[in-house]
Image 1 (cartoon, rainbow, N blue to C red):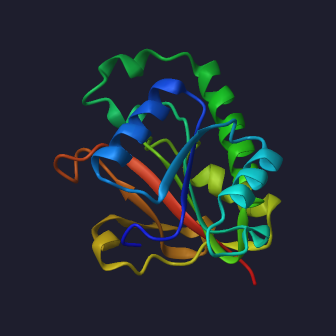
Image 2 (image 1 turned 90 degrees about the vertical axis):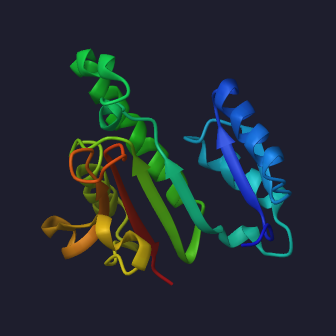
Image 3 (image 1 turned 120 degrees about the vertical axis):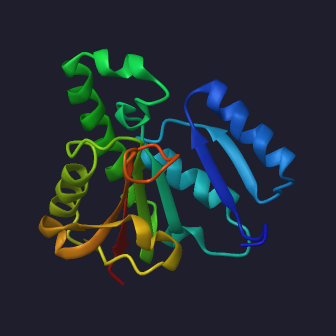
Length: 190
């Protein structure tokens, strides 16, 4: 992007919002605008996109929406061993929130655009299961194979999503220095 276009960052927690703003300033990224907003509110997200549109028609939605969803953080156990003692009921709440966030984000993607979903968790319930459930609820989206060279070492098979190399995963024990995470890109039909 070379700091062109518009990056609209949405975060509900003030502490994280301050970090986004501080890093944008430190990196001199004028294209990034961070806003405090509940990302489960699709109407508010669409209004924000329309207000921030620069040289494009935001009424169709964004070219790319990246959802780095709240999760159990189980992929960061190496750095945060206390995560192993979480209450299982919290996982139910998190997966319900992840579904609501995905549904709202989907409304913000233009036809032909992409939604990237990521979590710092290796748990199938927060990764592949969320994407498969999303695709059942939103048949206008598909999950294409990963063809990006720098992601090849992390591309993973998911038979339920149509076969080989549909998602990106890192594993702490396989990819030295990395936390475990999951990501998938879904494309909205034209």
